[in-house]
Length: 208
Image (cartoon, rainbow, N blue to C red; front, side, top):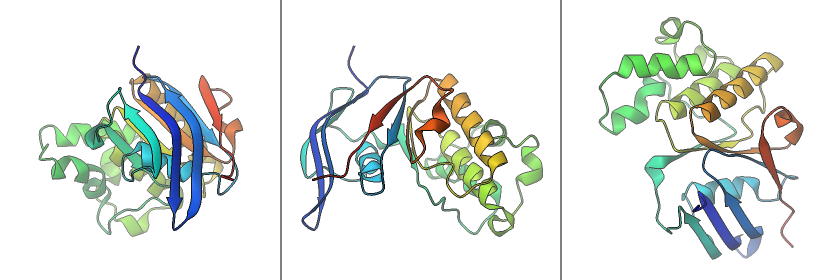
Protein backbone atom coordinates (compact mmCIF):
# COMPACT_ATOMS: atom_id res chain seq x y z
CA UNK A 1 0.00 0.00 0.00
CA UNK A 2 1.33 3.45 -0.94
CA UNK A 3 2.09 5.56 2.16
CA UNK A 4 0.15 8.76 2.69
CA UNK A 5 3.44 10.61 3.27
CA UNK A 6 6.93 9.34 2.59
CA UNK A 7 10.10 11.38 3.06
CA UNK A 8 13.78 10.56 2.63
CA UNK A 9 16.79 12.57 3.83
CA UNK A 10 14.54 15.56 4.48
CA UNK A 11 16.36 18.79 5.39
CA UNK A 12 15.25 22.38 5.77
CA UNK A 13 17.63 25.30 6.21
CA UNK A 14 16.89 28.93 7.00
CA UNK A 15 19.72 31.33 6.24
CA UNK A 16 22.33 28.63 6.58
CA UNK A 17 20.89 27.33 9.84
CA UNK A 18 19.57 23.76 9.72
CA UNK A 19 16.05 23.68 11.16
CA UNK A 20 15.24 20.07 10.32
CA UNK A 21 17.24 16.96 9.49
CA UNK A 22 15.12 13.83 9.15
CA UNK A 23 16.52 10.67 7.55
CA UNK A 24 13.08 9.15 6.94
CA UNK A 25 9.41 9.70 7.66
CA UNK A 26 6.30 7.81 6.63
CA UNK A 27 2.63 7.84 7.48
CA UNK A 28 -0.32 5.65 6.56
CA UNK A 29 -3.85 6.73 5.73
CA UNK A 30 -6.06 7.19 8.80
CA UNK A 31 -3.10 7.23 11.18
CA UNK A 32 -2.37 9.56 14.09
CA UNK A 33 1.30 10.52 14.19
CA UNK A 34 2.56 12.53 17.17
CA UNK A 35 5.67 14.65 16.63
CA UNK A 36 7.56 15.04 19.90
CA UNK A 37 10.82 16.76 20.82
CA UNK A 38 12.35 19.83 22.36
CA UNK A 39 12.04 23.38 21.07
CA UNK A 40 14.13 23.73 17.94
CA UNK A 41 13.86 20.06 16.98
CA UNK A 42 11.94 20.92 13.81
CA UNK A 43 8.36 19.93 14.70
CA UNK A 44 6.77 23.08 13.28
CA UNK A 45 9.11 23.03 10.30
CA UNK A 46 8.08 19.48 9.45
CA UNK A 47 4.40 20.43 9.67
CA UNK A 48 4.93 23.29 7.18
CA UNK A 49 6.69 20.91 4.82
CA UNK A 50 3.90 18.33 5.14
CA UNK A 51 1.40 21.11 4.36
CA UNK A 52 3.44 21.92 1.23
CA UNK A 53 3.65 25.53 2.41
CA UNK A 54 7.44 25.33 2.08
CA UNK A 55 9.82 23.24 0.03
CA UNK A 56 12.63 21.17 1.57
CA UNK A 57 16.19 22.39 1.11
CA UNK A 58 17.12 18.85 0.18
CA UNK A 59 15.63 15.36 0.22
CA UNK A 60 12.28 14.14 -1.06
CA UNK A 61 8.73 14.39 0.25
CA UNK A 62 5.90 12.55 -1.48
CA UNK A 63 2.15 12.46 -0.91
CA UNK A 64 0.58 9.22 -2.11
CA UNK A 65 3.74 8.59 -4.10
CA UNK A 66 3.68 11.94 -5.89
CA UNK A 67 5.73 15.09 -5.36
CA UNK A 68 2.66 17.23 -6.05
CA UNK A 69 1.13 19.88 -3.78
CA UNK A 70 -2.39 18.71 -2.77
CA UNK A 71 -3.15 21.79 -0.67
CA UNK A 72 -6.93 21.34 -0.80
CA UNK A 73 -6.54 17.95 0.87
CA UNK A 74 -4.29 19.15 3.72
CA UNK A 75 -4.91 21.84 6.31
CA UNK A 76 -2.69 23.19 9.10
CA UNK A 77 -3.71 24.69 12.44
CA UNK A 78 -0.93 26.76 13.97
CA UNK A 79 -0.20 27.00 17.69
CA UNK A 80 -1.46 30.58 17.90
CA UNK A 81 -4.89 30.33 16.32
CA UNK A 82 -5.52 33.34 14.08
CA UNK A 83 -9.10 34.50 13.64
CA UNK A 84 -10.41 37.47 11.70
CA UNK A 85 -12.08 40.25 13.67
CA UNK A 86 -15.45 38.90 12.59
CA UNK A 87 -18.12 36.59 13.96
CA UNK A 88 -17.63 32.91 14.73
CA UNK A 89 -19.85 32.00 11.75
CA UNK A 90 -17.74 34.14 9.42
CA UNK A 91 -14.48 32.61 10.62
CA UNK A 92 -15.61 28.99 10.53
CA UNK A 93 -17.21 29.16 7.08
CA UNK A 94 -14.62 31.41 5.43
CA UNK A 95 -12.64 28.57 3.85
CA UNK A 96 -15.74 27.06 2.27
CA UNK A 97 -16.91 30.40 0.93
CA UNK A 98 -13.50 31.14 -0.57
CA UNK A 99 -13.81 27.81 -2.41
CA UNK A 100 -17.25 28.78 -3.64
CA UNK A 101 -18.90 26.00 -1.59
CA UNK A 102 -22.08 27.56 -0.24
CA UNK A 103 -24.45 24.58 -0.34
CA UNK A 104 -25.50 23.39 3.12
CA UNK A 105 -23.33 25.99 4.81
CA UNK A 106 -25.44 26.22 7.98
CA UNK A 107 -25.50 22.46 8.52
CA UNK A 108 -21.77 22.15 7.90
CA UNK A 109 -21.16 24.98 10.38
CA UNK A 110 -23.32 23.21 12.97
CA UNK A 111 -21.59 19.86 12.46
CA UNK A 112 -18.09 21.38 12.71
CA UNK A 113 -18.91 23.35 15.85
CA UNK A 114 -20.46 20.33 17.55
CA UNK A 115 -17.36 18.31 16.66
CA UNK A 116 -15.26 20.71 18.75
CA UNK A 117 -17.60 20.63 21.74
CA UNK A 118 -20.05 23.50 21.21
CA UNK A 119 -23.43 21.97 22.12
CA UNK A 120 -25.39 24.97 20.77
CA UNK A 121 -23.49 26.24 17.71
CA UNK A 122 -26.08 28.85 16.76
CA UNK A 123 -25.68 30.51 20.14
CA UNK A 124 -22.04 31.10 19.14
CA UNK A 125 -22.63 32.02 15.50
CA UNK A 126 -22.85 35.81 15.92
CA UNK A 127 -20.33 36.12 18.72
CA UNK A 128 -17.42 38.37 17.68
CA UNK A 129 -13.86 37.06 17.81
CA UNK A 130 -12.83 39.45 20.58
CA UNK A 131 -15.42 37.99 22.97
CA UNK A 132 -13.95 34.48 22.81
CA UNK A 133 -11.68 32.99 25.47
CA UNK A 134 -8.33 31.50 24.47
CA UNK A 135 -9.75 27.97 24.54
CA UNK A 136 -12.81 29.02 22.53
CA UNK A 137 -10.61 30.66 19.88
CA UNK A 138 -8.59 27.47 19.52
CA UNK A 139 -11.73 25.36 19.15
CA UNK A 140 -13.29 27.78 16.64
CA UNK A 141 -10.07 27.72 14.62
CA UNK A 142 -10.16 23.91 14.72
CA UNK A 143 -13.80 23.96 13.56
CA UNK A 144 -12.72 26.15 10.63
CA UNK A 145 -10.37 23.32 9.57
CA UNK A 146 -12.80 20.47 10.24
CA UNK A 147 -15.52 22.07 8.10
CA UNK A 148 -13.22 21.70 5.07
CA UNK A 149 -13.22 17.90 5.56
CA UNK A 150 -9.49 17.58 4.84
CA UNK A 151 -7.81 14.27 4.14
CA UNK A 152 -4.97 15.32 6.46
CA UNK A 153 -5.12 17.63 9.47
CA UNK A 154 -1.83 19.02 10.80
CA UNK A 155 -1.88 20.41 14.35
CA UNK A 156 0.87 22.46 15.97
CA UNK A 157 0.57 22.31 19.79
CA UNK A 158 -3.26 22.37 19.70
CA UNK A 159 -3.60 22.32 23.50
CA UNK A 160 -1.02 25.02 24.26
CA UNK A 161 -2.26 28.01 26.26
CA UNK A 162 -5.71 26.53 27.01
CA UNK A 163 -7.28 25.47 30.29
CA UNK A 164 -7.83 21.87 31.36
CA UNK A 165 -11.45 21.76 30.16
CA UNK A 166 -10.54 23.09 26.71
CA UNK A 167 -7.63 20.65 26.51
CA UNK A 168 -9.98 17.74 27.21
CA UNK A 169 -12.45 18.99 24.60
CA UNK A 170 -9.75 19.43 21.95
CA UNK A 171 -8.43 15.91 22.54
CA UNK A 172 -11.98 14.58 22.24
CA UNK A 173 -12.32 16.52 18.98
CA UNK A 174 -9.15 14.92 17.63
CA UNK A 175 -10.61 11.49 18.41
CA UNK A 176 -13.77 12.48 16.50
CA UNK A 177 -11.69 13.67 13.54
CA UNK A 178 -9.76 10.40 13.42
CA UNK A 179 -12.99 8.40 13.58
CA UNK A 180 -14.24 10.30 10.53
CA UNK A 181 -11.29 8.97 8.52
CA UNK A 182 -9.05 12.04 8.54
CA UNK A 183 -5.33 11.42 9.07
CA UNK A 184 -3.76 13.59 11.78
CA UNK A 185 -0.22 14.75 12.51
CA UNK A 186 0.15 16.56 15.83
CA UNK A 187 3.23 18.33 17.15
CA UNK A 188 3.41 18.50 20.94
CA UNK A 189 5.78 18.98 23.85
CA UNK A 190 3.81 16.39 25.83
CA UNK A 191 3.42 13.09 23.98
CA UNK A 192 1.71 11.73 27.10
CA UNK A 193 -1.41 13.69 26.14
CA UNK A 194 -2.07 11.01 23.55
CA UNK A 195 -1.47 7.97 25.76
CA UNK A 196 -5.10 6.89 25.32
CA UNK A 197 -4.88 7.14 21.52
CA UNK A 198 -3.68 4.54 19.05
CA UNK A 199 -0.84 6.82 17.95
CA UNK A 200 2.69 6.44 16.66
CA UNK A 201 5.19 8.87 18.15
CA UNK A 202 8.05 10.25 16.07
CA UNK A 203 10.76 11.80 18.20
CA UNK A 204 12.67 14.65 16.55
CA UNK A 205 16.11 15.76 17.64
CA UNK A 206 17.75 19.13 17.25
CA UNK A 207 19.47 19.20 13.87
CA UNK A 208 23.29 18.92 14.15
